[in-house]
Length: 111
Image 1 (cartoon, rainbow, N blue to C red):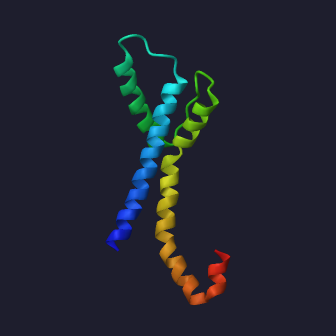
Image 2 (image 1 turned 45 degrees about the vertical axis):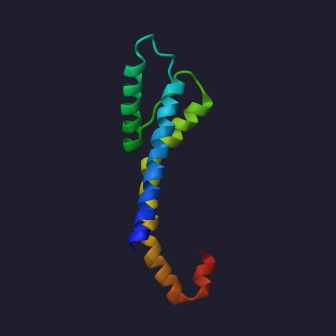
């Protein structure tokens, strides 16, 4: 049981970090270059905005028009929703498997 919990938490953490990294990269790709001396400030602003976008499933428009960065913003900002779907799958898998085991092999073939 504990091993399964560790695996589930690892999946959730990996998904959250992947979404955060994707949005963080996309924010840099969508913005014009920073002015000299503003790199650290911009990095902090992008980190805070990436966290905000991932946690609130918000949206942002790419300033430079980069299609890959726009897609990364869209995909990464949906990480919180993906985590909720993963939690639902984890919670519902055990009861669904028990129902299917009681029903026989036809239920498992349908899944």
